[in-house]
Length: 223
Image (cartoon, rainbow, N blue to C red; front, side, top):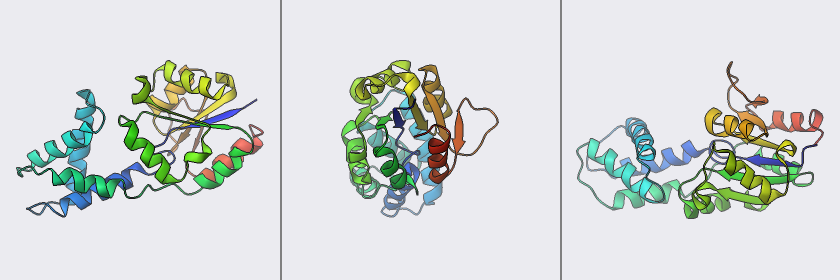
């Protein structure tokens, strides 16, 4: 019997890339030279991967990402660049179609959890609140607060404890094969993947639209 559904946040419930792209576009509009916003965004994304590999977390991530990208274009640094990015990035959180309907459906039937690997807890909590989804969650776990990160088994066990359910009683919904799907499966949960159907996945179910997910939860898992 399923007693809880636990979600990832970015790129699962909300469109992180749209918010991030808006922030980068706002930044490029104030640069002293003309740059292609899409090229700048893609380059900054590659730099962001390197930053996480360097172990940088928290608000320093934005600073380092923008500073390194600005330097790659040979532009002199200004602190206003980070401020401009953040003002736009945090201005709006884009919730995917069907998410609110799903949450309202689940709230009357099971416990709802949120497990995110965000490196800046204060910022992530602001974004969760801005999304309008906060009050649906019975428990929220942000990895940087606990120093436990997906796909480690312990971080899934922690959110299960907060919800007072066992692993076999929970479904985890995420978009990343490595961090969400494999992590959840290794912890003994069912794992549903949001995204395109792929040949190689450990997910128990793959979906693109939340309306489809509601049907599966209702008719296959009797939620």
